[in-house]
Figure 1 (cartoon, rainbow, N blue to C red):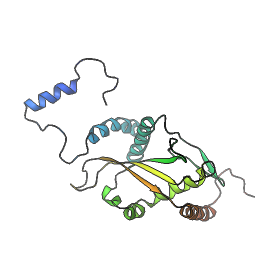
Figure 2 (figure 1 turned 135 degrees about the vertical axis):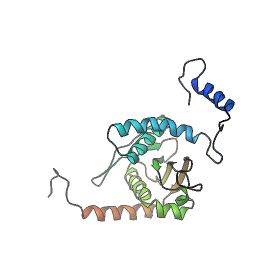
Figure 3 (figure 1 turned 90 degrees about the vertical axis):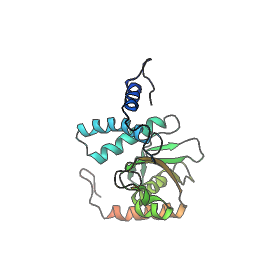
Figure 4 (figure 1 turned 180 degrees about the horizontal axis):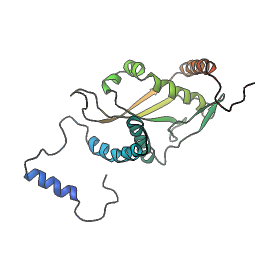
Length: 206
């Protein structure tokens, strides 16, 4: 925040002093995560770009957060193109500082953080995230045997609803280590469902 600004007084600094003189509330909202609303403001500029291009609100938030995280994690992670048994996948990033690497996933959601307070809650309420990353782990194990860890970076856009719907945003991480059998069982399920789907247009069917 503030990187790349020219020298001199920024308008925001002056407005802050003016607000204090006028008796307006100052500083962060009590209970807010430090800097979260400011960062949300920067993200919102990108969200508006996507929405003006015709994307939905939820998708715009998700893409803006991914774009932000990819720039923040540059140099220690990379986007990956996967293909495993004919199924394509595009994980967000890999942290290559570890051996084997750690899979990274960047998510933005308006669901409540209260739905992810425990491991059991996370698995139940965000099961699609687990299915997705275990699918990626399966594909990655072709090149990185033993990879079993995913770290989610999540923007909880509405916080935990503890102060009602629309409470302060929070940025948090969650890490999961999956057993090899969990990964394989998840993949078997994916393959079962794939077999029920009609071929995509333009694909050859033997």
